[in-house]
Amino acid sequence: AYRAALLRFDDQGTPIHDEDGLLVIGPGADGTPLIRAAGSYAALCGNFPGVAVEHLPGRLLAPGFLDLHVHFPQLDVIGSPAEGLLPWLEQYTFPHESRFSEELHAGEMAEVFLDELLRHGVTTALCFASSHVPSVDALMAAARRRRLRLIAGKVLQDRHSPDGVRDDTEQSLVDTEALIGRWHGQGRLGYAITPRFAPSCSEAQLRGAGELAARHAGVWVQSHVAENRDEILWARELFPAARSYLAIYDDFGLLRERAVYAHCIHFDDEDRALMRDRGAAAAVCPTSNLFLGSGFFDYEGADRIGMPYGLASDVGGGTSFSPFHTMLAAYYVGREGQTKPGLSLPPAQLWWQHTAGAARALGLEGVVGNLRPGCEADFLVLDPSATPLLARRTAHARTLDELLFAMIVLGDDRVVERVCVSGAFLQSSPPAGEPTR
Ligand code: GUN
Ligand code: FE
Image (cartoon, rainbow, N blue to C red; front, side):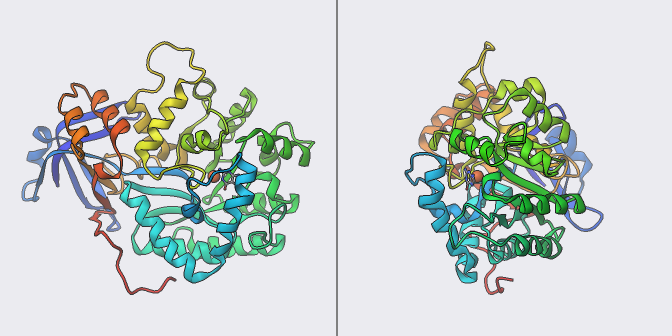
């Protein structure tokens, strides 16, 4: 058990701040470390006689962050200057991703990638691997060794893609089904069927992906949609019969529960309603959208229609793994086109979008993303005085909003003092000596 301030959320997404709180961890029915209790110290301390309590004065315990959209093979693409999405893919992304056919490279990069996620306090991620099977095997194996809740998939891209990343229609579907069998539901791992985006997939590949999505209902689906104007024109040209870019995916059975679509910027209300009605969710990627000049996610439109969403880094289009940077960028984006008075996105709401709200969008509400009994024991020890400026700023924060905003604006990985994954605090490096697979 840990005694410190707690940040958690109720079912409505309202933050609860226990200034002197207690978090109790214990094994669930199958031995999985779970949160057994979270609340005020005074109310709970009598309920757990004999349980050792570690006191962490001045610290804030918070749920581990979720990243709803991040590209494992794009670590070394961050900050690549290009004129927009399509040139960026051709000039930087595809050449880098082509290297992930090599098992050794993929294995080394998987450790670096997971180190980065965890150092920034991200304990659950929905990841694109590359189009190569070894990239998925390497990432899944590394995540399993660390007992991380991670969802990933092999990218499908059988056309309009250069040699080195383009896959074969039939083989890509056979490989996807084999990977589902190998990894989905292994411990905390999940698989996501991953068509890169409609322009890079033939009709046959999208149809095959949709058939797999129907046969494997518990598996996730992920792709990109309505990110960039040139991309949208291209998609419409390739699929002239579809009502909209988003509708292409619906026509192939790829909009359903557990489907997460990155960006969803240039949508109309019909698109938003289609996402909602199918039970799909948007991954909002503000640092990427600002960096690549893609546009601004319409928060008001999403809320008006009831389209679910959560936050994501979209590294390497995104500029940072840091949830603090992503939340700050989301705040800037939320100001764009804002018609309501007041704060566009209050800090606790931004935080919810990266934790409990993101878990809801993924279909994992009550499993991760919150400090509540029954949730898996993934949480962070945050130090709100981690830097000199933060210490000054948070010392005179009078409300939870002021405290959270100070961390969102001034914080980074230095705020994340310790990371607890599945009930165990991380060492700085992963257990060594195990094979990649
Ligand atoms: N659309 C297709 N592929 C990609 C990608 O790798 N990143 C982003 N941001 N958009 C894409
Ligand atoms: Fe992306």
